[in-house]
Amino acid sequence: MTLSTDQNINPEKLSPTARRMLELRDEVLAEWAEKVRQSVKEAERLPHPILINTFPSLYDNIAEAITPGYPRATGDESNTIAMEHGGERARLTNYNVHSVISEYQILRWTILAVLKKNDVQLSEEEALLINASIDESIRGAVNAFALAQSMLRERFTAALTHDLRNPLSNAHTAAQLIERSADSPKIKELAELITENLMRMDGMIQDLLDSVRFQAGERLQLRLEEFDVQELAEEVCGQFAFTCGPRFQLIACSSRVWWDREAIKRAIENLVGNAVKYGAPDTPVRIKINLVQERVMISVHNEGEPIPLEQTEGLFQIFRRAGAANSGTKEGWGIGLPYVRSVAESHGGSVVVDSGTDRGITFMINIPADARPYQDAPTLEEKPDDPM
Image 1 (tube, helix red, strand yellow):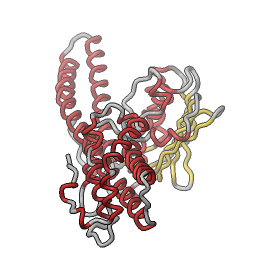
Image 2: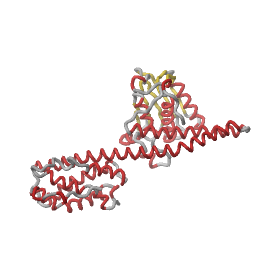
Image 3: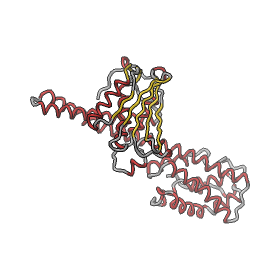
Image 4: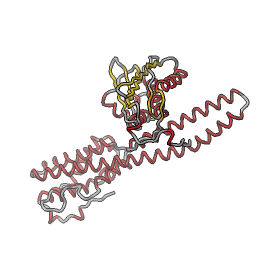
């Protein structure tokens, strides 16, 4: 953890305002810590050394920066103080990015308030330098926070997929052996069910891995092939009708596309599954497919309470769900909709949400019918099958 750089400052080289600012440092930081604990929920129970973190160093550097002629343009120039702070907040606390930003904003207000209270008059140039130092520190801390969180997610996903896939593969092999060697039809049926669910679990693990990679800036590795998306939708509706009853209405015409069939199937399954899980019980789930201007639109509609507009973007962030889902009893990982977005955008398309009182909720995937020109993935013929 970065220590205060106060011991490196020669007070004789600082301006009178900067020296007075350093004299008030403890008062500023004490008041700042109190305000942060009151305003930032995640900071309420942090031990003081963890809370204070790199702020003494930043404060000292700002004092140097407001001194005319001192070789430091802003408080964050040529140092990693803000980046270290953002990274440590991601790794050592349960902060979110808004918490990080709030800390710096409170520091800005506290510095100006304490200086004013102690009759320290800032020139326009000094005030601009303090604000510039805080703004640049926010940028550096947020970037480092996001990078650290991305790395943590990737490590978690890599460990999870490695730990889960080995036993899944072994169980899959054992189920296949039972299925082939069993004499009893009932045992064969149960073995088939085990195999089917193991494959589904493996697909969920792959969804998780794909979603994390996509949010880290990577496109999905697609396997493009030509097929009729209407037939695919009929297949998905049949699967859900078998377990959920005849709630599913498909309105579609034959539409030939060049897409990754398995990825699109999993995306539609996620949307239909969400409609069943979060929609009004025993109401129709409508799946529509339209071909318009060389683009195919797949929409899934269900009745139910609308999703507040401010929550819609969070739906597509991995491990986050809508407020109603978090407060209810429905279980979920928060990876389904991020995966849907990654599939749509990797095909050169998008996914949108339309929601309102008395009109229910609609999720729409909108993709060019021929996705080949819009991404660099090989076609199905060019890429070998991946082992489980």
